Image (cartoon, rainbow, N blue to C red):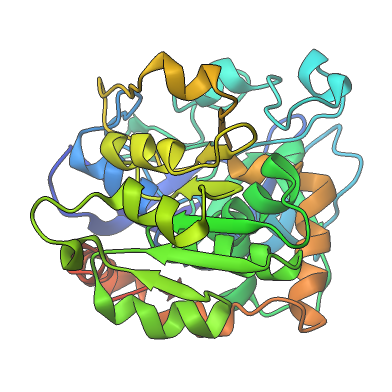
Length: 371
């Protein structure tokens, strides 16, 4: 079938809107009509060429919501008409990782997903007779896409697509890092490095669990107001500390010894180190969420870890997609979390490059494309 897509032909080149061909679902696969998709920094990161796993040509996008239109043989839990959110982190519930209950990083289709292919080693997309890579197993920058059943979370039918698509990445990544990965407790002090879409959801998660003090750190003063709206209690702009300002020392002094939990939400190795070193001696936990560029490394003095601080990482907020995403959708529908305030712009697919331009300029929190 012919579908409309934003195609990434090569790194550093704007996306091009054109018609591509999509083959129907095979065994264990599902055809989904994408109704809305968010623009995430990870898409921009891959398009920039910094992603070591980036493949071209590809149809990017991984933060979507839509409706099941057709199911292949062997699909057990979904049917046409079901509302779903694509999962770049699937949940097969059968692989050693899923059965361990120690991680959300399902390995069932990781090898082919990383190659931009479906589980059988082929692509469902093509352009002028040539295959096009899938992206993160989702490819939501097309109005129709095919995914494995294990990479789809079934959600309630009354949830608005243009809001809950954000749960497919940003909301879950931020809130989940607090609830599932770090398991922040009530009364804790929390530091959030970077107040973009992920950081604001970390703040939202910290407020949900009853954190006593939530300190936001960002060089963009325009982020302060919305961060306070989501629960931030203190704002620190590193630029205001002067050219030789000691951000770590400042945060330790502010908190009387350091933060209980810190979250790096930018993907900057320098911030990752500062986030760890501003965590409290003896028990502080620093969670890395941001994705750094290819070849970058993090470092700190071993003393920082020997004295009791812990460095942990979080992918998709530690959430198990098919299990936890429907719950997060329920939280939104019940008014327990705010998504509406984070969606600052809406565009049509034809204007998708404008959305990435606004992202680069720091003008948007989250832009959503509606089909």
